[in-house]
Length: 442
Image 1 (cartoon, one colour):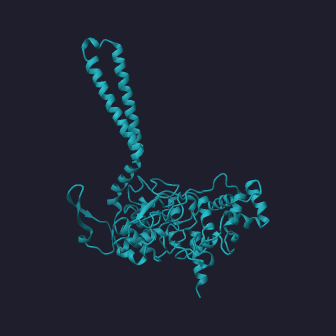
Image 2 (cartoon, rainbow, N blue to C red):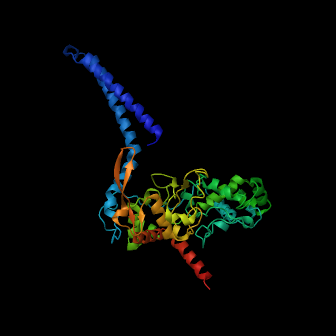
Image 3 (cartoon, rainbow, N blue to C red):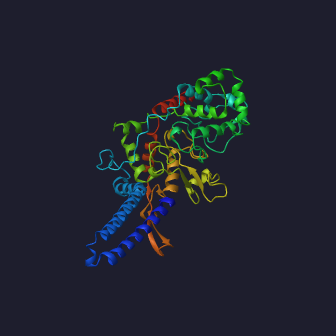
């Protein structure tokens, strides 16, 4: 519960208690004697005070319910389904009674385009997205890293490569469905597509423009842009802010709703295989969905519920994560922090955008699943006996020992989860990726 809401409820509770105390004194001292009961004035005062206290308490109860309802719903969902659906080798999910009673699964909106995104603005944005004049040496454009075909909106490299062959430190996120993200970049430092679009152009090791004025001059040198900006904005003025607005408008058209998951949500129960349905159920019962929630599978999204944009990544003492050096960069937490803090990325098209994680060090999706299961839900991954799952921990708060049973994710579970993640891939992008691989094969 937010601290300001908690303070409001605390103050309200105090007022209710004081009001009840005053009402009690009024009843005992003024209304209790029999001869006083005949006086309508005292009765009216007491009744009005009582009704006022009741109305105020009712409003507090409504506020408390609205604030706590998402948490209650989530807890109830996990309690009701943990026992039903956390089955390592489930044979069927779609026919299980009660699965959709409280459903966290949502369909992606049909479009992210805004009413102000005119066709002329979108067309200008598409042109600017492919414009190499926006880079310091005239060799790179946005599309250089965000390959819209074979790269599924990313570049297939571990980390970004900028002008003069400079190599960045972080993996390139896909631009597809980025319009539904409330936070952009791995550390979530940008709060809009417009803000994000400005970053790479001015980054010295990415597109390398020295400043916004240089970008404006580079576009103004091409006389064709005068008409394009006039059509999009009503006049020919070229500004860096307008460049970002146009690129963002185009990026809002890059939405994929043609994954098997989307067809499943539309009612085609055959769109997912039995293995993918098992993975979907595990994704829910294990708690993966609490971070990767909503139709864009990200707590940092503008669509969905239970918004949680950031999560810690504590890989200390996690053996499976050690080979990948995931702790070197700590994201928005800063280099002096004990653990990293990162934006929760979308899982849309994740199977097509490897290598994975913030430094692009993991080139196997099953390994990513194992790392996240170990780090984020503290599960035991792989073959495990009862002695590995159940441990005894000392609780300083209660000064007692508590038996802790860790979740178990078997190798078969990992395969099911990977199968489900593949079901989040756009059919169109998967076909383009497959075609690119075939063309590269000797």
